[in-house]
Amino acid sequence: MTQHAFQAETARLLHMVVHSLYSDREVFLRELLANAADACDKLRVAALTEHGLLPAGETLGVEVEADKDQGTLTIRDTGIGMTEAEAVGNLGTIARSGTKAFLEGLAEEQRKGAGLIGQFGVGFYAAFMVADKVVVESRSAKAGSDQAVRWESAGDGGFTTETIARTARGTTVTLHLKDDAKEFLEPSRIRFLVKKHADYMGVAISVKNDKGEWEQANAGTALWTRPKDQITEEQYEEFYRSFHLWDKPATRLHTTVEGSLSFTALLFVPSERPMDLFDRDRRGLSLYVRRVFVMEDCKDLLPEWLRFVRGVVDSDDLPLNVSREMLQGNETVAKLRRQLTKRVVDHLVALGRSEDEKDTTAFTAIESSFGPILREALVNDQDHKDKVARIVRWPSTWTTAPAADGEPARPAVTGLEDYCRRNQTDDKKIYALTAPSLEVAKASPLIEGYVKAGKEVLFFVDPVDEWVAQHFRQFDGRDLVNISLGASGLDESAMADKAKAMEGFLGFAKDAAGVSEVRLTARLADSPCCVVGDQWSLTPQMEELLRRSGQPIPEQKRILELNPDHPLVQKLSALHADEGKRDQVKDWLGILRDSALLAAGARPVDGAGLAKRVQGLLAQAV
Ligand code: ADP
Ligand code: MG
Image (cartoon, rainbow, N blue to C red; front, side):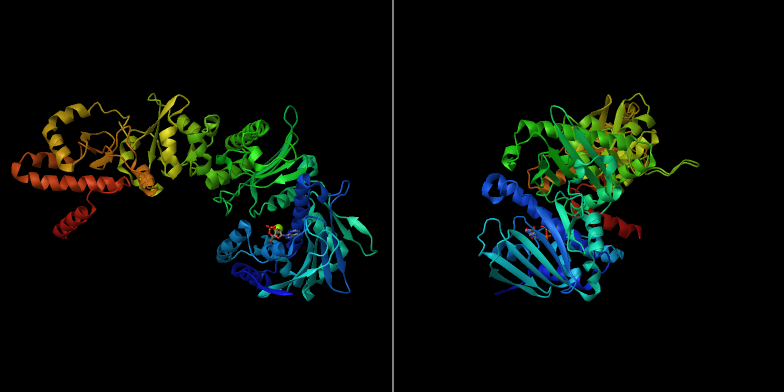
């Protein structure tokens, strides 16, 4: 017999499972049955290439048996099994990102004071919610009968393993139930729980009744293969949980397609960001071929910008022995992906446009959790960007302005169709400002002139929006204008005369401020100045993104725009006429430039100098 210590993380998890999980303890059964069903799936997959593993005609199954005299509950499967090394690795460490994320999320849960902990899956370790001793006996499908393993633990500190003889393939998990968990010895209670938590699993689960007879307790057919009207909301949700997601899905799409391409898909969009969203290896679509599980985390079935969609796809057209390598460049997979993408996009568009309150709530949740990911389509999916453009949303000068008297509260974000409806102007433009945050955008001097002219400006404040602004140039015949780059698009006709009157000053200011150009603008109302780039420049945020990724940044055009109606600008212009004041004016222009750069979320040219000058001014003022 060998003694093993649990990995530190596992020990922490176990401690918590044993000491603080009291509610919803019944989910231990779901977790153990899911493992048993997974083990059967894995054996089926392995047997595709190693024919000896699963004798022809043998059906796989799971059995649950209670022994009231011993106080034990046993879950038995005829699946892939484990070798001793696998048992040590799999039942002593936490590999699954879902479980790790659970641990990390738990601190948060506790802070929120939610008593929902029991709803979470903690995998195999959930057994210790109800058992004070767990014994696992297993023989790998690939090992001889003298190479089976017994794994045993009381859930504190460590576990033991030893080699045993075992003829049966698969795994037997025996729980020595705690005194307060004896309810799980009642066959009727077990049958009820199997139905509740494991009905969707694609393997038959039998429970031994009081008379010693076996009774199948679940449907034993995969949920998505059943007619929609025979599936309850609870069953859908239970199935959703099998993806290690614990929120309520915002929406689901259950669709069967028959024709030149035949498949069934049952897909969900979570309402909250899953904790493993940024884990590139986990892209939750599981692939089945004619009801047989083939692989999880399949990345080739949807584009990357739909990576928040979770669920299963069951294809009738792929070969059973399809591998990850084969999926790439496979014609059928490409077709499947096109069809699935179209369906998901159409579904999202329908939700986004629906007036139904339930749909609106669902879409709002999806938008706020995954909006930036969805907007990636505007940048890199030529085929879908026009459709996606109809549902993506941003905050704007309209959404952030107070509602007028009697007007209903404004939404937090708005879409392009609504923007165009509200802004029926003949300039055929859509104005957007990219900024590092909503606060910076709202306070930006750049929007003043647009607001004054009654034009709405969208706030592009997520990093992805920088790329959107660069690559998504048109919507419904209107040009998208990034107002921090290039001409304002406003009526600048009054500026020519004013510029003439200040010609000398503008030339002086260009050299004094060390910028590419100084010009007057109509885009300012209350502020004296702002800094913009030309049409081909990088925005300050883009510059920052590139800088952070270590890329060289070409010299940028910086245009200092002045408000000719602002008293400060007028005074500086007048002062500059006096030769003796020029050094002073130059200094002040430097402050103006750097403060304008700061307001745009950019780095000042001379931060230390700016600080010194502002402090000097303050000293005088105080
Ligand atoms: P997860 O199922 O999310 O991977 P678990 O904690 O439930 O996490 O299980 C850990 C691992 O232990 C599984 O991934 C699997 O490799 C192994 N395992 C658990 N139960 C069984 C079983 N009945 N048959 C074979 N392997 C199992
Ligand atoms: Mg599991």
